[in-house]
Image (cartoon, rainbow over all chains, first blue to last red; front, top):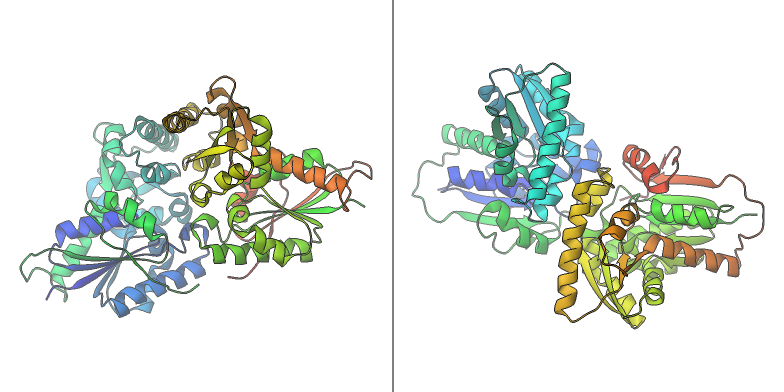
Length: 273
Length: 273
């Protein structure tokens, strides 16, 4: 029988991670939870984030029977991975480490650029993970990109222009530190929708790492090597159930752009305050 | 003795309202509360917003001794004004009605455009207030403008371009409805920082109403006519205390742009969950 994989995010951006997982594990069943009532996690304390993320992980593991959890939320991955692992008895994979590992594999110079939200950059999680891989990383917050994606301007000249400005500032800062970056990590679950614009905007030879792809690849490897095998069984229609704690209408409206297919009816759940 | 005026917002955007109040009532004392731990209000239920706003109003009235409250939050003004008035015994003024009244005074054709956040537009509060004044209003959500202001791009060609796109779409919709708008209401506390860009972008003859100015003007009238007079007393240094429930650092960093002067040390308070 196909295992159930739980995917958690504070919002619905993590649907890009679910999309990458579905491509690699089409015979698995998926339960996605967006804790939309309590976003943004980025402005909250570590203790509050740990409590919210643990509750969400327990919902997926205990109530939805997930045998493997993917934390498709950069803030929760950065600040609450330990707390989530303590809260459930199934394997838990965060989104940051696979991105850093992919950057290590891609980079020749060892210098990498990271673009992410303000909260993720503030946590310095990508810098820490990159340093652990022997890389030098420089991070930049790009707060306009999530609203531009949510406005649907994923192929708009204004978005291309904003990306050029952000990358120009990031390159200038890297040059000032004597770095020679050859890899750019997209460290936010909204950014896969801007991947083409980023690939057009980087200098020749700079590789773009999509952390949603990286975490899905790592999850597929762990699942195929581990106890919860998904290689067995015939590929049928992938089963996906989506849950949210609020704003179901926005989830249903914007979700398909992130998932690349209909999200179906999103089920509203209450995890408490 | 100068009265204390309490100003409440879910974030710090309401500092533009405080700025307009200080200009008109320089001898008053002000206590500003940004409920930054629980923003955005826009995605929450009416009941939750009413509870948060009532707690915030009680803090200002009971603990800070405010004798008059200005609700510089469009969402709370739209959904929780009654609940706030029930929660405190001092006069309470919301931000929406004065904006609609100013549009009524400014408009010759009776057709007005309103730009605001998604949550405010979703509430239809400006349309309701405008209709009550005999105006026809058409509202548009401009979700990129708050992030552009917070990025500091208040005089940036990209922001001017985004405003042109939004206004173009709004004018097309008004034309399709056979409307002839001659007034534009800025229905978000962040937008006063974009006033010049809006004034450059509107058609000749269209008047721009800044709802922060409108609410401050109404507050000054009510205070000078009412029990809590501020006309007495000599003008000295205006006393302003700022409180926030979270993200004090961001408040202190961005606040001066909205207030037009230093915000001083922002005091962190806890209103519970």
